[in-house]
Length: 127
Image (tube, helix red, strand yellow):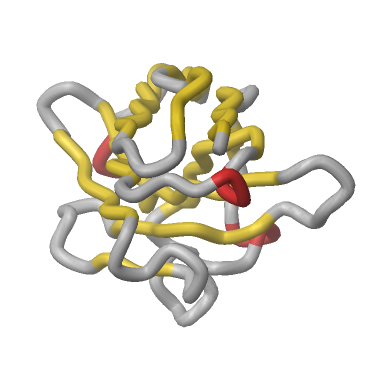
């Protein structure tokens, strides 16, 4: 399984940005998907997750109401729509995949749940 994230960049505070992550190598619908981020000097933080059919979504407290996760199973792609960006959102953003047999058991916010990780895409928000 390979995950390729894209869509990061340098933006000003207050704007919106959409990240994309394409999964290849196995059927996309075999996996629940998630986004995490890691700022310099900090732990990797859970942002959002979505189950294989896209019916259930989960959010971390820091982004609830500002970020939205979605997936397009026809395109093997998971998205993270980020709104009202703040300088503190500056980080490397990672997508991750977890087998359906593991995902959704109350563990979707734990890094250890996810078997596969993309390389990450940098998001920098200037004030």
